[in-house]
Image (tube, rainbow, N blue to C red; front, side, top):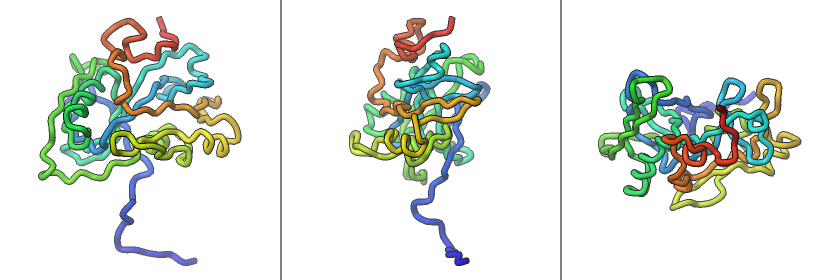
Length: 232
């Protein structure tokens, strides 16, 4: 056996996974975004967890489970320096979209996220400003979709950078590789069932229509997929 010990970590070292955090109910979340943009897709809360929606053959949809769009950025907590993935709704994404349009990037955006009335499911309020990066040593951002693939138990080799969006790589699911790896329709095993994930529909949030908001009962304007069922 030969072991190649080194005294330093490789330059491209990055965690295979990162914590996925949402806005807490009782205290504000304050962090600085490390990724240049956000990604998002429609998701279902199915089998006790959030899973990506599949536009081709979605088991959650077939069982009447509603879907909502969720966005993701990587961020570093200003107090603990924890580097994590932040999940947010279409309504909360508006503040990040406005910041991106004004500054050209989300990296360096300092935000505070709170919940209205300090309720667990209260509406999330996002306030943003530009951090002084001369005082910060931000870590390099991960490939967002690769981290989400780990969190959602998707094969890492199904994620690749395949095109450029406004000067930085955007990511998508490599459907052909997923098909070869899983010997069938790309899926994750959940509650004894295979849930297809070949088209998890990762998208740049810049493509998210402004009409997808959570402040209305209209399913076409509240962040839900317009063709997906809504529980009454």
